[in-house]
Length: 408
Ligand code: TMP
Ligand code: ZN
Image (cartoon, rainbow, N blue to C red; front, side, top):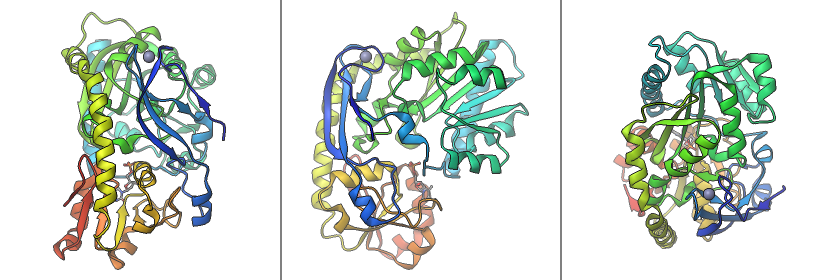
């Protein structure tokens, strides 16, 4: 796989400074067919840096997006907490859209990039009876979306493809990019492509993990090669403007450990919501938060390393990308952890990158209970605890790894 080393910020060409060096790691989503294959994968440097000019937090070693995402095992789970989040997000879209366009009947179309298996577009369809289009680069995931009746094209969205997409499908007044911007090396190009496909009254909705939560929660496991950037409002406001988009509202949500949803319009607005000023004020703490984060991450890793021995048999819960970062920074995780439990059928029977740990279903997990689960899918803690009540009632434990390892 091709990698290259960035010495300048992907948003503004400013200088990069190292925040946290996690050594080397294999690609966190490259689940393999055999344990041998999983353990023989190449490992790449994993270093979180930040730009001292615009404060965009980012990795300095990059792997081209096309090589990361043409086949993908991540499928958006049909989790109840996600559906609640979608409902709230859709109502916020309705309100911002009304403010920007002056129309209270909602958007006329919706295009979503990185639409995965179509979960969010299905929620959109339940709210508005409008034409929808998903743009998703992974062929295997597009097939799943198409089978569910969600119109989806197999394509990378960006400057190279936007003109063809416009000539085939037209422009749109609502463009959604949820949890995919972090995956792009060419952020600027993608934002310019969004500005191009949007109508004059159009609104872009960009959701990502919020770096302030990542830092304050010591979430070092969010660092993996698929995540090129870690978003804050300050650098994004400036970059959006340079690409012809105007930030109007910045919502935050506790989902997935904390996300920020940026609402940007194509036409400059005369009103910018207070949420933007509040976020900018809070982000003034960022340089200090970065330092505290590096300390928190290192002590958490050391604590886990010592604390996991002596707990008996341990399985991890959630064959997540972040779980792979976590296990690959520990020494000897492959002998500490027996299985990884995950509800996603396409992950089951595969082996985790680096450790070679087998992924098993939740049904099988109920037959082969460990003494403790390392909760690598901590963002679904409540749902996972609820469906495993019988395990904890009998004395089984969950190890919640972040921000400080603890038993639950
Ligand atoms: P994510 O944090 O990257 O979204 O991944 C969460 C993983 O957790 C996903 O692979 C599915 C898995 N999962 C379960 O195994 N059981 C569950 O109840 C839920 C909600 C998720
Ligand atoms: Zn920068």
